[in-house]
Image 1 (cartoon, rainbow, N blue to C red):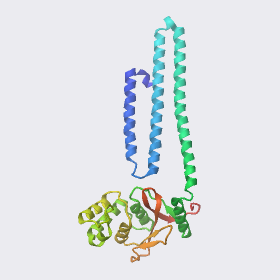
Image 2: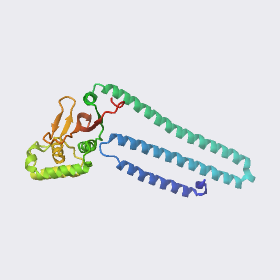
Image 3: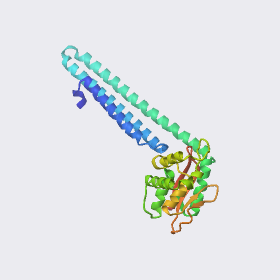
Image 4: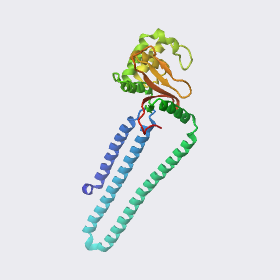
Length: 296
């Protein structure tokens, strides 16, 4: 093996370099997680654990091979003096190192397996508790409404852009010009700025419940355009206007409502509104036509 030709210091430096490269890779993986995306965070955490475990086992195996190889070299040089004793010592060390390595690796695997089993047990327990929870009751009610209309839910990530991403998906569904969430945010912010007098009375400061000042309203528009600020009823109304298309919102506990019903081009976007989908707050999903076998 290549590492056998290295000095002990060289092997140590090689391992340090690999650790540094792994840390850089881990940072890249962590930065790929969108705020609030719990599924992505879980996948990245599992991938980081797998990479760290793989590097631990690789470096431990390399260290063992290096020590055994150099022990063999030393034994060859001294074999005319203590060949029998050296062979016994070498075998003992090899056995001890191999046993230690296998034991340590097995402990890691057992620990990981136990953690996964406990996690699955908690999920099963939580799902049992949540059958009659607000989130599940709401979700099943919305699915029933959709099913009766030959529709099914299309999940949108809970990253603060859910309204805009849901509308972006609906544009594709109804065959309109596709736009991404950033383009939709920009169009919404532009319309809000151009029509401040129309919308300002309906937007209050969350800290004081007072109407926003012009300066605060400008910041509100900037947040719409350039951050992951959640979109609500005001933004929904603006999106319907700038896209010249009605948007229907389906809810669990009350009748669906339509924004922009004055636009009649034979097409309509449909969203679902969830009050209890996530702990962070309300959420919008998109819909598609039902596919046989996928309804639930």
